[in-house]
Length: 214
Ligand code: DX5
Ligand code: ZN
Image (cartoon, rainbow, N blue to C red; front, side, top):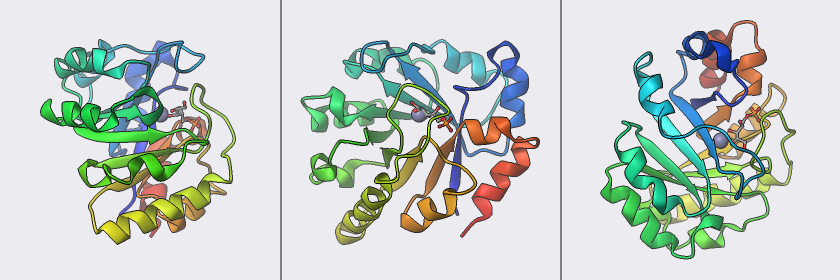
């Protein structure tokens, strides 16, 4: 079964309650946190998580596109989010950071930018719940998927099979009706999408359609 993460980055922020209700069939609410340093954009902070939790039971995953992510773990620990995804590019001590996140009892994910090799995962893959393959350069919604990332997903799937571990593969950015099947065939277990669902006339049903594909 494919999981869907609904990114609220391109939702109508003035109607966030309605926008979150629109995606109630999603498995995850995906919160894109940007700091204006690691990526050239600024978005949400930790206070969004408890606010969203007041109106939705969907588990929240926080995609930290920030430098020094370790500085923010304490803040997110108070919020009730379920999963923290950090970028491999932001840490000199990835193993230590992953362990720190696990100590907070979060599920842990590591994201890789399109140009980042899978090599940095080789010795930590077994500790991860999910690897997030960025299929666009992080920072903005509504971009086109970078096709070279498909072979990266396949390669990661092979690594996971060889290690026989439970790590899932998430893909983030540019997912659309033309490419989602190929992403799943390549090995993606979770599709993270904003534009596709918020542009759809029926977001709930579009999510179910994405999830139904085997
Ligand atoms: C990009 C974000 C993505 C993005 C996905 O930096 O990490 O989560 O919002 O949105 P779409 O579907 O518009 O590419
Ligand atoms: Zn994201």
